[in-house]
Length: 155
Image (cartoon, rainbow, N blue to C red):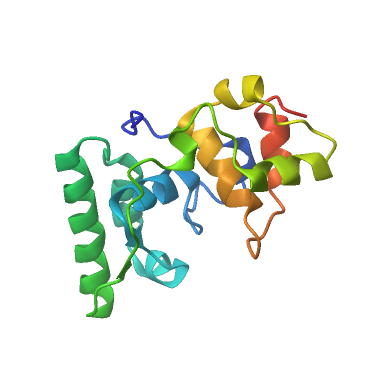
């Protein structure tokens, strides 16, 4: 795992980070880490202080991961009365794999004329790799992928 205690907002998220009207990548990273499927509709029901608490809360050690999962579920229960879904937790997620580049971000990078080779991939932080993986998935709004490539020095 990588330290998640210092909030990191990407430039490509700047249009919504101050209002936290969308789920920032660092929170999405933590949600995947703790296995919670949080919908935007849930996120938007949270108070600003609750959203900020999820941005700031650590989610690295096993104890922190469990506490984060419990906190998210408590917020969802408080606002909706029903728990949110869960996700399987990958013990070796692709964003932590420095030597293996997933095909989706490679293919998406090629669409913009960028080469996502091993040197570039290993030079990224796990959160940056996570962002590229998430932004390159089919069915995801990929409008920020090119901005992320530029921000990460890959284009």
